[in-house]
Every structure is written in C-alpha cells, then in structure tokens.
Length: 276
Ligand SMILES: C[S@@+](CC[C@H](N)C(=O)[O-])C[C@H]1O[C@@H](n2cnc3c(N)ncnc32)[C@H](O)[C@@H]1O
Image (cartoon, rainbow, N blue to C red; front, side):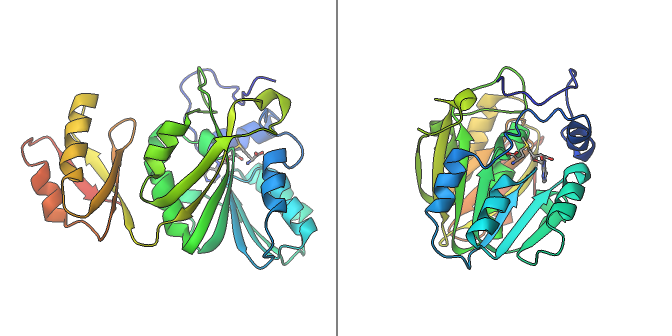
C-alpha cells in the first residue's frame, strides 16, 4: 500500500476543511483499521492504568479503544476533523474514561503523563515541527513522556511528510531527555523498514519557547541567526522551521527578549516576536 492520503493535487492547505474532506471522501489511506502493532506493543508495556494519556490527531483512534479494553481510565483524544470526531462521539457515548475533543491540537490545553504519537507528526506541514516539540513539552506533566512511531523515510509529496532519526534527534534535543529511537521490527507490511519507534521524557530542567521570525530568505542566513541565538548564555537548542517563519528556543530559563533582539540587530530586516 502506498502511504498516500491526498485527493487534492495542488498545493494543499492542511486545515480543518482538508482533513474533514479526507474523512468524508473516505480517502483515509493511513487508517489501517486496528491498533498498529508497534503501538499495541508499547501499550502492552504500560502498567499504570491511572496515566493521563493524550492521543493527538487521533483519527479513528484504535489506540484509545485498545487502551480502554485494557482498563486505562483517563484518555483524551483530539482531532481537528469533525467528520471523524462525530463518529467517535457516537462510538464512545457514555464512556467516562475517554474525553473526545474536536479541535486544533496546537490550541489544546491540558497536562498529561503520556502522549502517544501515531501518524500525527507526519501529517503536519514540516514547517510546524518546532511548534510540535514546543507544544508537546507544554502539554506534558513533570516527567511526562512522548512515545510512538515516526516515519524513517522520505515521501515525494505529502502528507505524509517523512524524516530520519538524525533529524528527529536534533529537533527534540534538550527539550526531551535522551531519546530512545530504533528501527521498528513489527511494522505492518506496507510500512516495513520505514518506521522508528521512539520514547522520550520531558526535560523538566528547561523551558521551551516559540517565536515568530521575519526577514530570513536562505539557509545560510538561517544558520547564522541560529548560531547567534545558540551563543546566548543558557540556550541549549535552537530550531528554525523549514520556511524560516518560526524558531523554537530551548533554554535553562526564558531568554531575555532584548538579548534575542540584540543578536539579530545587525540586519534591519529581521524581526522576532514571542508566540508561546
Ligand atoms: C494521517 S491522519 C492519522 C490518524 C490516526 N492517528 C491514525 O493513525 O489513523 C492525521 C490526523 O491528524 C488530524 N489532524 C491534522 N492536523 C491536526 C491538528 N492541528 N489538530 C488536531 N488534529 C489534526 C487529521 O484530521 C487526521 O485525523
């Protein structure tokens, strides 16, 4: 099976209307119809049924169904597409162990022990990856974990959008404590040799902030700005997104805004503003 989920050939805006239409048109090639084997194996390893668990971009959420079967009692699932969320509301009606939210993950508020990643990261435009890391850090409680499956391959067009271990480790570096990430040996056949299973724990010693950025037009300038921010005392990781419009900064304490502005003052076109 080709990992495709798109019916719109031109440049896609991956908003609520896009995802909702995929469910309405039944072009949901990612939906395997059951809990994926790597997720099942991970869930089987969990012993504490009191964990507060979030599943973002949950789709038909076979993972939540499996968690409920095993007796987990505090599950929240969120998806932006009303078409699939309406189905879930019916399916799990009256079940107090699961909260079903229709909305944007990036606007969601809460605190969780565990967040499960299953084909949500790859569904987002790559430019949102730093924002994804910052939001995951925000939503996890002290010592909370993020775990799941990521693609270990590239795609010609997306979604899905691929990646590799080196890229993911650089992205999560410092915001999360050493990531365990390895090739998945029990993927479904169409995804064989193209997935990584991972687990990482929130680094409680750092703060993660996201800023909007204006003025960069090339990779060289992006590297220069990134290095200038990295030179600021206490800064541990800086990741600018693929279209140079956002930058995530991981640091021991919140960076002084004036220091960030001073670092880019050499170019009058550059502008930085805090987002979260
Ligand atoms: C590739 S599908 C995966 C669905 C499910 N995890 C699965 O494996 O079947 C990506 C899902 O993310 C949802 N989604 C995309 N952007 C979202 C956002 N910003 N907030 C919440 N859900 C989102 C889509 O509606 C879609 O259900």
